[in-house]
Length: 299
Image (tube, rainbow, N blue to C red):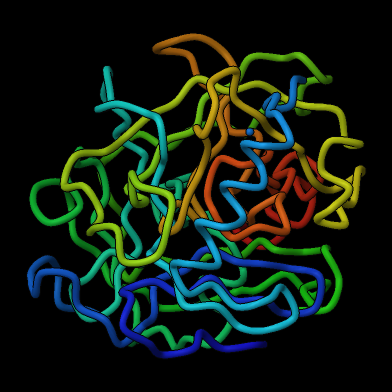
């Protein structure tokens, strides 16, 4: 695995093979609090706007795509505070700081992105489950086992999915996995504690869980990120500069209706060659494509 590159920013956007991940650097503590254990329609933009965004990225200190890039962690850009309770939503933490999102899918298992945990030991990780804030409330749990999908390789776009076994069963109600992800144009929603501004050093994760209305986009809209159609979902927002951002990695993509959401995707990476959130659709691991693996792992 390509590890995050330490830098001034709390989150590193790491270029590793064809992937650009949105993960906080594991040694950065945002505020020194929390638990102690361990997006079909593409965004339309003029060439002038795209050039301006690229210039902004370069002026902010972003390196070329072939290099590792320091950047603020994955949060939702263009979203708003969560409008309903998601008791199965979890903040995956390292050293008391929010690192990635995760979803409770069984009383003792959560689903997240492989790139969030491939370098971690169980003792490095902790979770806060069922709270709209990442630093307080809900149920705290440790991790007893990390299971990364065997297809996960940093130089291919497959298998960016992992399961974490909790060190105790929790009382929150798990979210159900959808039977299949929707076709292009299907409405969806993303949630997470990723940064709400799109460039490096622009801020800390919001305390309050964020949400954004999105939709499944044609795979062709994510070709710049080498999307694997059978196992990944290209996702866009109707709003300009709105999508997942650094710190949202591992969190859920949802389909359904309020109060009856089903899990379809796991936030994986940017879909743009420019490391500025919301400039293009984002790529999600299609959790439904891994249903058999999930079932056999959790028993």
